[in-house]
Amino acid sequence: MEIEFHFLNPQSTPIKSSAAVAVAVAVPVPAMLHRDYTLDLPDECLSLVFGSLSQSDRNKCSLVCHRWYRVEGQSRQRLSLHAASALEPLLPTLLTRFDSVTKLALKNDRRTDSISDDSLSFISTKLPRLTRLKLRSCKQITEQGISTLATNCRWLRKISCASCSFGPSALAAILTSCPLLEDLSLKRLRGVINKGNGYTNSVEEVLIGAGFTGSDSLRSICLKDLYNAQCFVQFLAGCKNLRTIKILRCSGPWDGSLDEISSRVPGITEVHLEKLQVSDKGLFCLSKCTDLEILHIVKTPECSDAGIAEIASKCHMLRKLHIDGWRTNRIGDLGLIEISKGCPKLQELVLVGVNPTFRSLDPIAGNCRQLERLAMCGCETVGDSEVACLGARCTMLRKLCIKGCPVSDNGLAALAQGCPSLVKVKLKRCGAVTPKCIEWLRAIRGEGFSISLDTMESQQEQDMDIVVGNETGAGDQMTEMIDGMATMDLTSGGQVAQQPRGGRMRALMLVAIRRFSGGAGPSGSNGANPGDNPPSA
Image 1 (tube, rainbow, N blue to C red):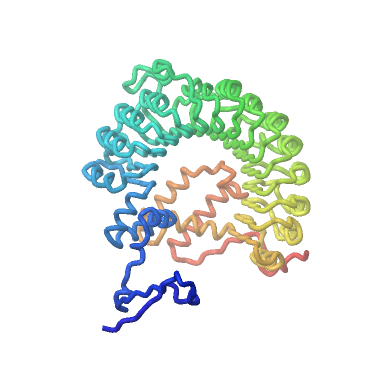
Image 2: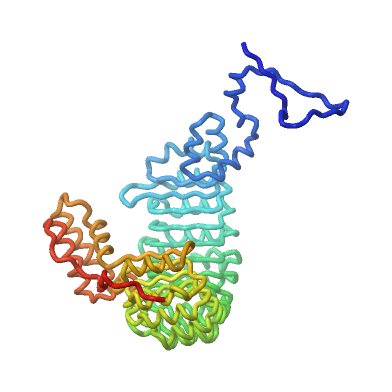
């Protein structure tokens, strides 16, 4: 057998010290070539390596050998399981392998039975150090299972529950047994209603009965698609360190609730309101939160310029403002002018279904010197002069998105030399912008600048590809497409281009007829002449 001698450090010069000893090892060459050097790594180092890999790569690594299988399982902290009832007999094996999980997601579909209370209790005993839990469509879990979980997993910091059926006592158990809870998200909980659906007590009565008046640790709460989310107002008002409130598509009037919350918790910094019955009175109440930094007002038709002006006059720390005016024309230049005066630290502005003009965009560009991100969608009054104003005055602007606005090549010419910090521009459904102008801008701005154009025709083709698919089963696909268009939210500024509703519908139908008939048909026009020369800077 051939033998070679290998020194520990063959690149170093010999050490002349008398105490030094040159160590030589006689190892057969084949053994050296096939040696597993990962055996020299302790399990802790191997765990750190696995921690830097993606989920897919971790799964592949676990199949290499028995040791990697064991170490990968013991070091995994995030686990997502399909929580159907068929999972229950597999839980002992799974949780024995993954015994260090701290972030767990249990997701089920609405058509199958989920795991039961016994399974959830077993999970809580095996994973007592859970910090994050997500439940989706686990309708077989009741108050008993949630109560046991809350008792055993007192390290929970974030809980998200959606499409579950447990009632108010389960929420009371979570709030009273998890003293470290920071983030709570409740979506589509059909069991959380006032004295109905088999429950004799409301949420307020259950919380009061449990002796719970508020949480010192809770910092963020999201209420979405709840019938009577106002029942949480007393609880929210007692959370002294609450910073983020998201109330999305919850029924009932909210002006009074926002008044109570903002009066008792004035330190709120982030508010999201979407499809709510809230008016300027509610915005007046929110203005008490003078530390407000992020505000989203989405599809609240009763809000107007007066409410926005009040926010601007008191919330001078505002950094991000999103407004979806739902094409009601109640929020426009007057409110945005006040924003330019009272919110100089504004960094991000998103306008959907709002019609600003040069009159408001000019002071915003001039006074909000830190503005970095601007998006305007479905703004019928944003044209070339407005874009030219932004190009001339927004020196810090980095990202610009324009969708469904009457902008042409002439307006985009201002971006050739303006906005020195601009790195990304996204244009969508701007029919008067030509690809030639896009290429010209890309060449002028050079490397590090990204610009994309999605015209009306290409968007329609993409919509048809998604809805219609291949031409097989044309009859069923046409019915499906028409049903989809009937339920489209055509009044949303973020979804509608500058065409009127009838034009949009006719355009989609024309594309569908051409695809199914196989005929060429007349091609639509995007409003630009391909032969035009790019604008000169």
